[in-house]
Length: 81
Image 1 (cartoon, rainbow, N blue to C red):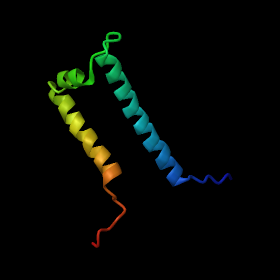
Image 2 (spheres, one colour; image 1 turned 30 degrees about the vertical axis):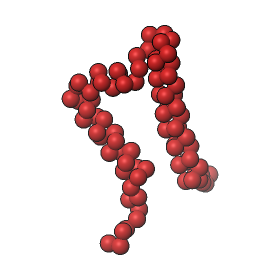
Image 3 (cartoon, rainbow, N blue to C red; image 1 turned 60 degrees about the horizontal axis):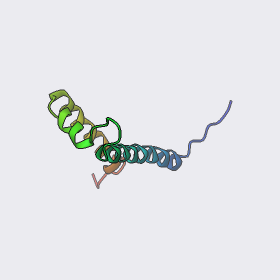
Image 4 (cartoon, rainbow, N blue to C red; image 1 turned 90 degrees about the vertical axis):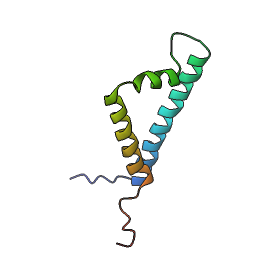
């Protein structure tokens, strides 16, 4: 039998680096769009168009809740309860 040891801190760092990479890519695409290179729409126009749909607004709220729960809240802490 092979024992697998998972380094939790390394896994967390890799996950956060992935999210940072996605944010950096979004900023880079937005900069390219604002300079008028290619046929890419700016991020603000894309978000404004998407927010016209109710299901996308619900998905956006759910996404923010998920990010807040996993990165801002600490469900392992008992808070004295």
